[in-house]
Amino acid sequence: MFNDPEKRREISKWVIGTFTCCILIYLGMRHISSIAQAVSFVGGLMKPILTGGILALVLNVPMSMIEELLHKKTKLKKHVRALSIVLALILVLGIFIGVAVLVIPELVNAVALIVQIIGGALNQLASLESNAEIMASPLGKYLADIDIDWLALKTQLEEFIKTYSGSFVNQAVDVTGSVVGGVVNFFIGLAFAIYILSGKEKLKRQGGRLMRVWLPQKLNDTLLYVFKVCNMTFRHFIAGQSTEAIILGTLCMIGMAILRIPYAPMIGALVGVTALIPVVGAFVGTIVGALMILTVDPFKAFVFVIFLLILQQVEGNLIYPRVMGA
Image (tube, rainbow, N blue to C red; front, side):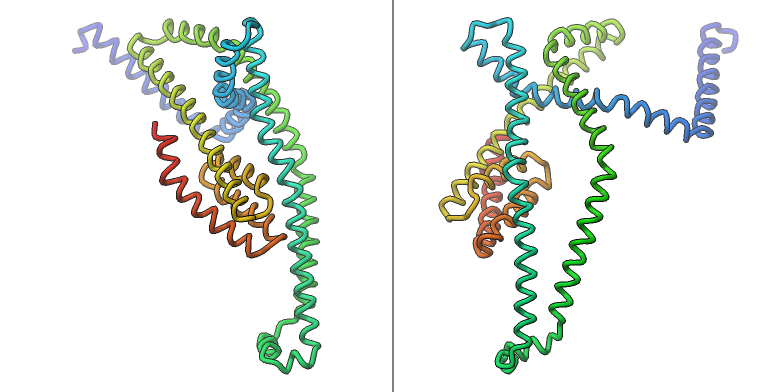
């Protein structure tokens, strides 16, 4: 076996490769902290690029639809791509910003009003205990058996809110730097996404050329097929999920209007947008909507929760499979 030059060459490659791998593993374990710092540094540098790639994937869905429509309806062929990108950005960002502007102030007011109502209720309970006639009634005996200092409870609630508010402000100040960094990364990623969308055909050709040069033909064909299927599936998923969110938000708004529940348009839009968030989106829309309605009518807040639970069951079992089945 050792007299065969080809076998000796293969054994030498195997020995050298094994020895090199062992050395690399040893050095990696010895300097693992430095490697982790280097990986973290590279990850930080790559974050805007990854953000841009994700934004490009998401924005490509409405942009392609708008671009196809503009090609049919307008003669400005040279500027269709730029106009499509701008309209897609306005559409996606406008929806989220609009819902946030409508919902967040109302939610803050709702929480403040709920705290005020709870404080007033504790004052009323404290005043009941000082009323001799009420204390002689069955309700007074029940309150006496509970033996709760309602004024002390209110004071503790106010102190808790003040403490929490102060810590919230401190945390907000602490994360301001990271938020600014996140905003900077977002806009860098957005610029990268616009660059990808504006020349996606050229980038596709260049990527295909590199893959043909550096990869075997079979692997190249397999990867191209995988990328094509992933792109098609992702586009259909985003389009179907958006359609599903519009249907759910519209049905929620119509149902709330029929049941005469307040904030129907606002909460319908909120439920539609939060439906785009996987797993927790339904809970967020339900809790925020119920808090807003609770400040107007507690009974209707209860009705809203029951209605939305029924609507989500109908949507999940009847509408969603038909929209997303493909």
